[in-house]
Amino acid sequence: MNHSAWWHGGTIYHAYVRSFQDSDGDGSGDIQGLTNRLGYLQWLGIDGLWLSPTMPSPNHDWGYDVSDYLGVQPDLGTLDAMDRLISAARERRIRVMLDLVANHTSNEHPWFVESRSSDTSPYRDYYVWAPPKADGSLPNNWVDDTGDPAWTWDEKAGQYFLHNFLPEQPDLNWWNPAVHAEFDAIMDFWFDRGISGFRIDVANGLYKDAQLRDNPAHERAYIYDTEVQGRYGLQHVYNFNQPEVHEVYRNWRRRAEKRPETPLLLGETWVARVDELAPYYGDNDELQLGFNFPFIFAPFEAPALARVVSESLSQFPAGACPVWAGSNHDLPRMASRWAGGDSRKARLAQTLLATLPGTFVVYYGDEIGMTDSDIPAHLHRDPLTADGKNGQWPRDNARAAMRWDRTDQGGFTAGTPWLPLPDDDSVNVADQREDPLSMLTLTRSLIALRREAFAGSVAEYREIEVSDTRWSYMSGPLTVVANFSDEPQPLSLTGGRTLSSRTVHDTPETLTALGPWEAVVRYCGHSAAASGTTAEQQR
Ligand code: GLC
Ligand code: MG
Image (cartoon, rainbow, N blue to C red):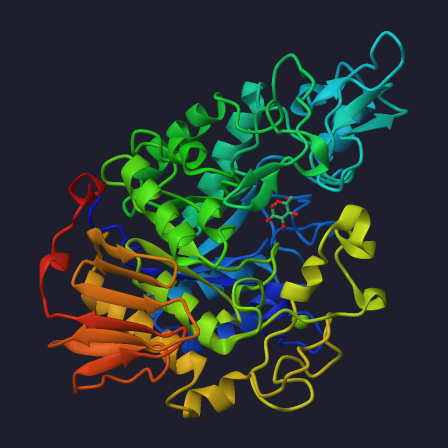
């Protein structure tokens, strides 16, 4: 068991590369721009940097439709630029992770071009092809992420191909061992270049039911009052979460463990319940981290959040490391979604995410409290959600360019930004760096605190109190008390150092009250955190 993994108690920054920093004035963030901002990321205190997709792509889904797994998208940079980023980051003790799209490719990938060309092509079986049913109807009732049928007829092949996302993103056929071999080689290529891990896209996908059975109808599938699955009236029983996927992760994990510094496999495990998430950790021999969507989708209420935390810690295998995030490029940002634009709530959320045991993932801009933009429809760039098709929320709203300063272009570009900058120019890095009470100062202080307190371990978690208005817990040497209400609450914390989501700074005097939507963290010295505690001990 690896107790010294860098992500244990660590912080990973999720950079949506195209929106982070432009270096060449074309309006798109790029790898050189990111490299130029490494000083900022080091100052912030992160351990890992996950880049949204960087591989060549026709961009029907902004890089999530890959046409070459061994290259770099030209408007983001070159392989040389990527190499330079990896080594410059390493000098600052920041590990770079890439996004790996293994569930599907672009329809422009040479494998797919070959696959549709003839039924004797060795690539035919790389994808999921099916004939119509005897009555001429679609192979089954599956729908894609936009709610349209998941099958598209291909004239050339004379068959339907499967796509769980856009028709430009044909699903790979993981029943074919050749596909496994391709991805082993792709991962080796990047590990050899110094990549420290992958965020695995659609990690609960990959395999589909061998018989392509119809999915059962389900009006809505709710979890903690949030609809996660069952969109469009179907449950994802046969097109996601197939048992065979676990052997893929056992294989990837075995291969990762053979490397001198074990790379991190962080799955986009898009499932509704903790009991569906836990299996992706396997017997601690599959993914080292799986995003906790039950937590992300929980309402911003103490009982719901605390419940996911305790369920996670009791259901994950011994030695497993949880991971906590509040935002990503597919969802409304937490400052809007959870906090409804109330900065007290966003700061409270950040404090919780940063003090729970395990890994903390910060989506770019959340450290300055970015809220969703309201990008006018004619400027939308995301084909998957543009036009609000089937009620989809426009993902562009969470992908606006980073504001580095107050200037018109926000320090992001010398050109025209590919998506408009957020309207509120006061939410910017330059101003917040100078402000001892800013969200940025809070986030940086939290990251520094967790580094010190967790010291490279998965802290022991103990729930102290949960009510409708209050959540308090211990996380290693940290005691956290959070007020989930509009009223002040009494507080008795003595000794140690404290950090408040409202005032940030250590307050040496005994705090006697907790403001509305405030969390206070107390740190008591160098205790238990130093040794690697396990989920076993957490029970
Ligand atoms: C994942 C990505 C999302 C993408 C989809 C298809 O959910 O996070 O952005 O559209 O996979 O690749
Ligand atoms: Mg650029």
